Length: 332
Image (cartoon, rainbow, N blue to C red; front, side, top):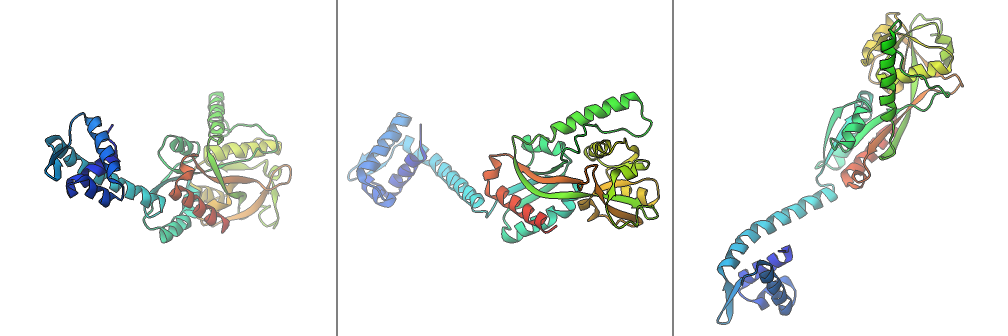
């Protein structure tokens, strides 16, 4: 097998014309140069140098190998420099996948801080909700996935409810959806960086009787309302919370678009529960926001995290991006 150190010796011998001069150039002994040249000739099974008087020159095979060695050593040098640049954060790439509310609140300040301190590190972003984002991470399509999950709610085990009046087939489909979402919250094979607990906020029409209370609202107090639900995972958690409070919500509208949720609530078509992060990027005109309490009296929250694979966690640019995301979350 031809080794890079042997090719460096061949190049030095060709440049200097002798083993002793090559030894001085490479900072080693003349016997060491001789041994490495013998090892190289043994690898290719042909003489590479020809002695002529007091000097030596390359054989035809030696000249062919030197021609290729030049390109090989240049490529290795470039590779070493690129790797060193990545290790030293002078270069590198971090591909983020994030759910929309984190994309508009946590990602911008985190990426801006990283770019200010390390402009050579390139960051890209695409949006996806869990569990799709976790599949992208495990499939090698990104280095970091921002995701969320909800803690178990008062022991409830309800699955996402379809809209009010849906047939039995729709409910079966919702149960399958719940199983898929549950699989998406298995993070046992990932490195988890907790970012924040994002409180859930109740949205009520401005004229709602509970809007002016000035204190928390228990979910049981909203049992008779029509509901506007969000993404499948959020909808499933809403059903769990309501089941813990002793009722099944009547979900008349379901949309992933937060401005649409606000608009529907403002029009008096129902009530909703949204994460506080969502309200930081949406103007809640025409609605009242109230703290929400579960059946056990504790605030309802979702856990927001940054996820990566164990090997990727050791990459300097990935570790720094996670640090910047944690810093952005700490200022929320």
